[in-house]
Amino acid sequence: MSPELDVAVVGAGMAGLAAATELARAGLDVRVFEAAEQVGGRTASVRVDGYTIDAGAEQLSPRGYRATWELLSRLGIGEHEVPLISSPIAMWRGGRPHAGVADARGLLTGAGLSPLARVDLARFQLWLSRRRGEFDTDDPERTPLGAATVAEFARAYHPDLHDYLLQPVVGTFFGWNTERSAAAVMLSLLLAVGDASGWRTYRGGMDVLARRLAATLDVRTGHRVHQVVSTGQAARLLVGEETVTARAVLLCVPAPVAARLHPGAPEVEADFLRACTFTPALKVSCLLDRPLAPRHGPPPYLLLTPESEDDVLSAIIFDHQKHPDRTPAGAGLLTLMPNAATTARLLDLPDEDVITRLATAAADYVPGLAAATRRTFAHRHPLGLPEATPAALGLRSRFMARRLRPVDYAGDWVMLRPASEGAVRSGALAASRVLSRLRAPLSIPIQARSRRVETA
Ligand SMILES: Cc1cc2nc3c(=O)[nH]c(=O)nc-3n(C[C@H](O)[C@H](O)[C@H](O)COP(=O)(O)OP(=O)(O)OC[C@H]3O[C@@H](n4cnc5c(N)ncnc54)[C@H](O)[C@@H]3O)c2cc1C
Image (cartoon, rainbow, N blue to C red; front, side, top):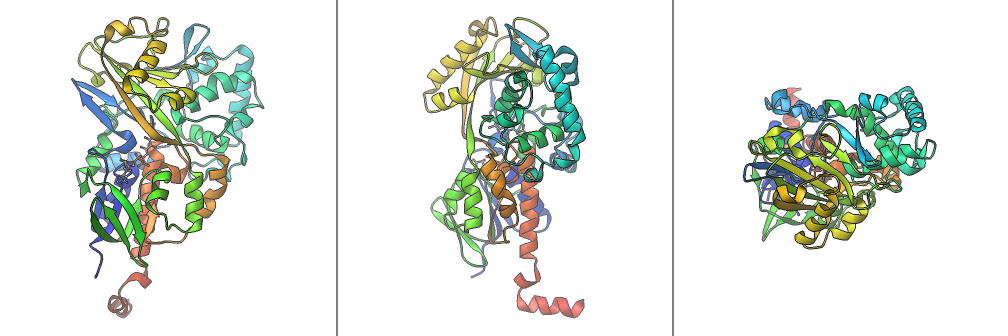
């Protein structure tokens, strides 16, 4: 019996939707199975009482997001729907915020760095600009840094560079512990994405692109896939109580989920899947009756609270500064993000305990928080962001050279890139792998092959 579908895509996050879009455009019969009730995965947004809450991702950049911008332009989503975040990122140090982190302004203001550390920042930037050509987000394993972790790399510089720049930046934006994740990946990403003063967000919430892509596809939400089995030239999926067959299956879920769903994966795939560990992420949204700001300085979009200053929080996002449409007129919205140790401690506690712990810590930075809070929500991502450890980096080139098989993969972890662009790029790559397998001469039925030879 021939398979029901050309391609079954598991997961309607950015990787799955990007892959399905390419495959459907190529004329294949594609269906996306998504366990959740909504699409978007870790870019999902929640809409409550006129507030738009980003439950996962927060922003994107005009640089280093080429595949995302290509999709946006194909869908006719213009720059006005992805406006600039005009407020700065600030670093908390010595009782006040210092604006200009990851921004040209930071070179002047220091953005929380001591004067000696600023000299080292210039040295670091000079080194980076000279070796720019050796860093590529698509091939992070091919940089001059080898297996060095972020913390090891930072030891060549003033300690402030780790404590008041790299630790808070990678801890907040990538969810990383600097002792575990690879410096090669971090530097490739920072170089690709560039200055934070250009960062943007979707006016309608971070799930805008996912929802627009899904609207053009056959997506079944509320359909959890339990198992995927390769059957030679095709594959079988157990979806809820049903069995579905497809010529190709794309597992567009985090690596630990892919490993669980496909226990029969060949060793070269299984080894990389095991090495692709994730850090958990936790966010608390505070819906406010007014737009609050930190005690001092210009209102930032994001306030980083480094581990050397705070043992609970990693950052506070002022979502109303991100874009005014995130709240009803005159209201405010904050996102509280715990650091890695606090996330591990709180992840399995009831919402009430999580919210109380983070809101108590945030009150030190944001006066009037308790009085202005109308409602609160906790968002949990047990598989929040790919860690990109040296072990995963070491196994990646073998995985990328794997054979084309009926079951394949996409997701930010494939690129070792803890950002939605990694997911989109991996989706496009997976789609081209599926197309080359399904359209390779050997997979064309004999009759069709001989016809092709005759007409050639
Ligand atoms: C807190 C946080 C903040 C972030 N901030 C940013 C940011 O500002 N900018 C940025 O670019 N990136 C950010 N990211 C990263 C970005 O969100 C991810 O890299 C990207 O969304 C990953 O997409 P994906 O498709 O690979 O995976 P996912 O989004 O995880 O998609 C996988 C999908 O598969 C579904 N699924 C899982 N199991 C099954 C199953 N058995 N059957 C069917 N479906 C299943 C899931 O429900 C999910 O929808 C952030 C992530 C987090 C967690």
